[in-house]
Image 1 (cartoon, rainbow, N blue to C red):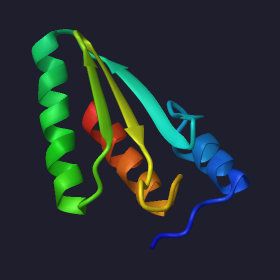
Image 2 (image 1 turned 30 degrees about the vertical axis):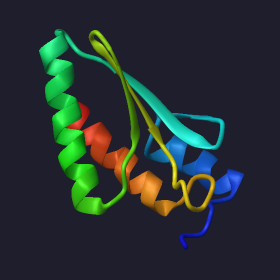
Image 3 (image 1 turned 60 degrees about the vertical axis):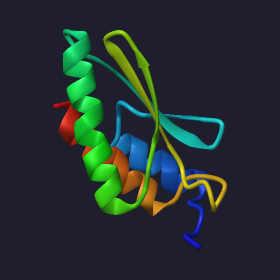
Image 4 (image 1 turned 180 degrees about the vertical axis):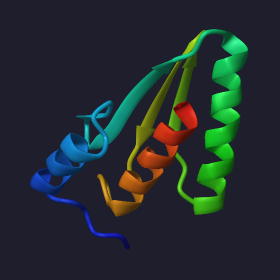
Length: 95
């Protein structure tokens, strides 16, 4: 099982690499607003492919043109290095 990151490790990663993310209830959370509903759906499809290739799947909430991603390692009960990697991939996909 992946090891949980400490609060200090998470804070450092957010500050240095993931400034658009925040921590809520032991998960990394970011919302992305796209110009159209279909742009949001394309983002979801891209992230789904990335997540599937990593075998690490985020929770995704679609609200018209706003997509919210919640990334955490379910089996570990919190945030691990895998979540930081996936969050960076989501940032790249989001543009």
